[in-house]
Length: 389
Image 1 (cartoon, one colour):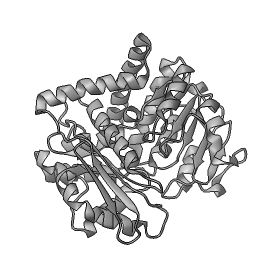
Image 2 (cartoon, one colour; image 1 turned 90 degrees about the horizontal axis):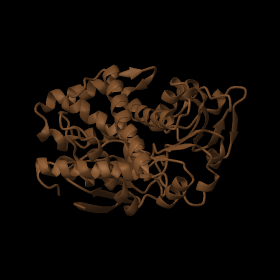
Image 3 (tube, one colour; image 1 turned 90 degrees about the vertical axis):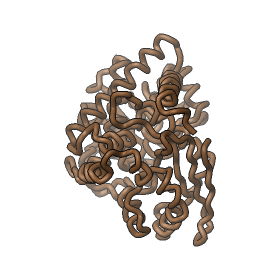
Image 4 (cartoon, one colour; image 1 turned 180 degrees about the vertical axis):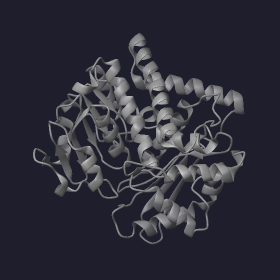
């Protein structure tokens, strides 16, 4: 652990945290979240996950070479009218670390456009300023990233799509490995923000029936399949579904019902620790894909494994958002959607396929296989750049 910072907001008294787990070439990467109940322990675990996520995507031939892992968190309700003011004070307090060590972006409860607006008000050029010394041409790299952020595909920004595309590709690879026909498979997605919404879109495009989506207001379900595009068109900026857009056959219910809807794929894409040893027992899905960070507790994952239900871990499944930023910034891909989609699909299938092979050979979990790959990559990174801090 390189650094832990705890902060108290002078305006509301709420707490905020920044954990830099590891530096590689002097820089760490990780998003900023805001949610009631966010703790230092949670942020610490997320920062460790970012270290794994970065290491997992180490490919020596790429221009993008992994950074260290970090995470920020604020214990505050993002729906509160004071949330933006709290965010601004937090970013001002963390300014020296943003300028020197921490490259950051959106996470649960915090949108990238709001981060960018607030940083501009504070006189900071971008949320990835710390990475500029590692770039051959920072101005050209930032323009390439800005151009990518301007790309829209069927009404949604490319930056909102790449993470969910990666999750969907991980899920589709898992279905293939389990011998399940994607066109006969059903999926349930918890969370309909940028990650959950994009995951639902790409699963539906691949022929998987998205039969239920849970948002902060409850559950929307239809065993024949939901109209994902129609629901995306009517969601609010936090991913809440407009119930006025529901079709005949769509039903609503309590949010906790998402775990018991019959489906082959379960995608927790909202909050951490939502599947624990109490709720695990009701799951009948054949595959769990972690789109959110830390949604399945270790005990629940062990019990799922004992029941023959594999879990594709978060630092694998949801790694595309992070990597897409750096692939674009360093110039491994251009700003076009087709380049991004090809890279994400190729990389995620290339990650998930070997995990299933390794798990089948050893009898271990997908997480254990992924951790072994991370450990090997971290050793290679240290050998190349010197031991990380």
